[in-house]
Image 1 (tube, rainbow, N blue to C red):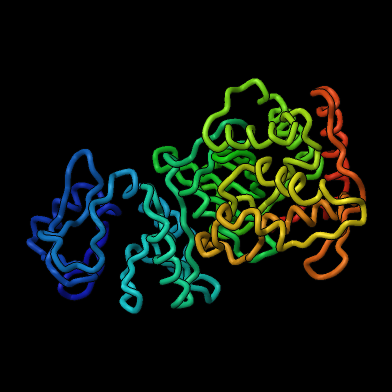
Image 2: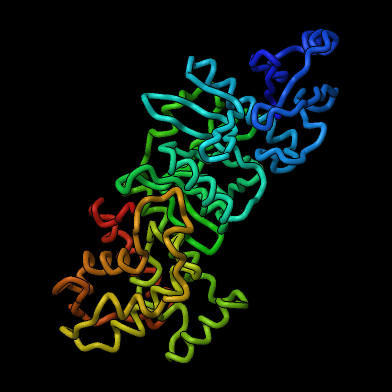
Length: 397
């Protein structure tokens, strides 16, 4: 722990002191105690580690969750010092007895109580949900900032996203885009990722801003940016083109099963209509890629119908009963957005289908398939242009 208390209740943060002051304090013989369990702790002052306190024994301390590495400790301290420099009311490692949790940093700001968890190691989704629920049960806003060791950037706007990092997606209200935060204590760089669209099982595109922590105010965490229509059109045309070019790549696992299903329909990847593989902001809830489930909506439900034929949202949802993560698995997102419903809304705006009543749709036009890859690429370009012609076409959910 970075902070402990003296017998008279004074808080001491060793990492905020220089080495001479720490050694002088140690020579005074003052005793220090854990702010959670009240048991005595000892000073740990080394050359290669951040000065901190440690229990003589970890038995019976409700805040004990195992040792934390230097990377985590340094990052937590830098975030705390950053907030202090902005004259914010901030506490380090404060214990909240009503929920038996100890956030890394606790802030009182604009009459709001905010808990910051700086998470550098992969933990279970159950722990993330439990901690988040604990904060919210006491009216505390949780913010999870991941260590930059968990951040992999591929290109200017593309990055790795897996099931663990999906659970750290924040959405402060349903009208705002999901956002991810990363911080590197070695470079003191803060990364804010917004307007996120998942493109593959473990890859996404988003607005990525990386800048020195000291260039930010705390309120910058809540300043949101969207892609322009032109930016998103360009990026999604690239994604569609890459998707079409995967024809020659040897598939395996679920992708192989999907290719076999497609072949059973007498089709190959280059034959698929351009309305397959459209951007969906709530794709994080799907266990399978965009092209997999969207092709099944088109080929299993819509294509067999005659024009004016009617189908239901429930029929489409039923195809993916086992492929959809429950909303509760994303505790930082209040929206109940459903990717299948979002897709049907896009098809409606593209005038492929028409909503006739609550949960019911009719087919407005035949679905067009392609004969060769050049025709498919050209068709994709035309559809993407139409898709982003009006900003309202893409739902930020």
